[in-house]
Length: 426
Length: 81
Image 1 (cartoon, rainbow over the protein chains, first blue to last red):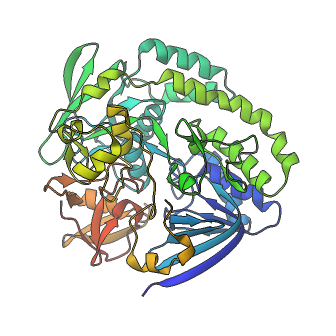
Image 2: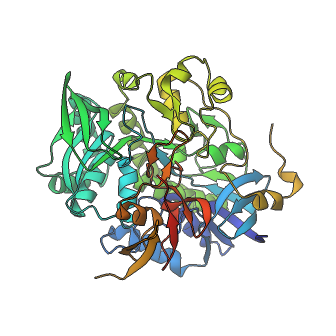
């Protein structure tokens, strides 16, 4: 039988990416007890996943070093799967964890949007951020040929990072138009700090082809990807590769905020100027409130941390900085809308749900996400629709609105450990 | 040269950089992580614990997300892709 741990914090922060770290540090200034809960083996989130790596960005060292010096209790490898008023239930490899809190800050981050196309389930077809995460986790890609496809600035970051790690980046396939891309570049120049970042990327990516109006239509290979067919300006061509890294921008992880009762607006958690959600005492920062990048996540996290410890004055000082960075959210949204052609990539037999192997044709028979779940088992596997749900939303226009405990598959012993007042919500 | 760690993937020894995840060891071994419900080979998609495509058996415990578990010396990993 697993052990059960009970933890109590004045402020609990869920998610140890930049927003969560900044929130925990700001909240710690008050001298209250702060817990930072994360499901990964180490703090840093996805962007600072390679904390042990000497090649990590210097900004991450500053934040992570501060975190190690200040009295924040970090609960690593803990997956939060249920929430009741003032309490969370989580599980780690060897125990069930009950966490009670005074204030809660949700910094649950984002994941990539994956779109189905023939061959997307082949091994070595990965997310763009997914491949980067694996390289940060130790994957050796030196000499490997990589095609990067999808949309958004993450593709640049992944190309620069994988090249630095010795890979041969064959090309970047960006689905948005050349005009939107150019306008994006100009607008980002006006955001503080972004011009320098652009210059750095331009240098890091020199010589790598960047094709706009270009997307993958199929991947081929025997047991792993060997070739990708791309479409560019109405013409198709084939590229040989060892990895195909595909990411169609980011979608917020709003499952836990929803379970906590936080109101959403256009799929993002609605917050006030102090980053407080519609539920008093529950704050939210980072990507769940809008996809806006690292600097915005840090400042919004700090605001949440100060506000959660009743330090409104300090929070207010950061409003102007946040407002300047919030422009990025709009700029990203305008620059990378997904083109309708991407809805037609899946063939009738292309799998949409990878957990239950449900093909596109089985979904066409249904008119809602709920019907597709009940009749075709789409979204009923262990990822609980985290991959196919957003894809189905894009392909069929379905509203993905169900969230219920447990948020992740958990051990029976962890379920048995949670008290009765965590009853399933209706 | 950073420290390394050795594990067993499907009975075959694999050495990776210390701090690597089990998913990395599986990929380095040339194996694929799991067989899907219709028998297709699968390997990591998201790399961050969301997609569950990287599930393997670690030291006899099935259904572990290999991208979220760090390699420890002499771990026995079964990847059935």
